[in-house]
Image (cartoon, rainbow, N blue to C red; front, side, top):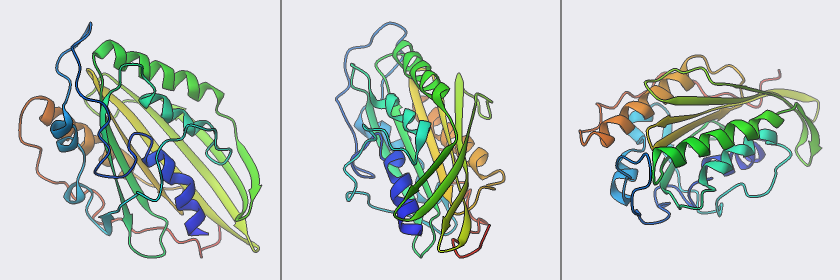
Length: 252
């Protein structure tokens, strides 16, 4: 069952890149209204969380088996596919993504992406589009080859980090297969700082992530701000150092 769960979440982690660590799209262009400084390919990669920032049992993984994007609606993901709008701008943003997984049977996965738009105004519109897309969030109750999924979505704009705007999305519920009902969950945050947006996704066979989504998001924003200010990235936080991955073998 864990393989299907990873397959379900993987497109979210790759919305902005065809494969981790190699997903820069579109060269920097001329500044537009409300612009400050758009990241080029090197800086957008530098702004991503790395292995030492995430830490714990997570290692960076290659995602070239997934050819990127959530351009078609996925019933299992429901309204969370709205994250796709962040990469759906006429002025191609510079962007890059990475994802990290526990190299075992665990479904635990962390994904992050940084998107640098032509201007703050374009970034504003992208975040508005995301908020509008999330208005269609409804509970998910479907069957597929791996069992019966029941997931409850949540959205809010609670700000955790030093940023202009933050949108949070969650899925929590169960996957029932062979009379075993396991908890599953996903937490994602998209955070805007001027013309740049960073998003972080954490998914696992659990729906109780504690403070880990918040701490990952804060670390991602701190790194983004440092790179935007032409400063060295902060010391790695090893956010997930004490994280214990969930287990699909544990009934809900």
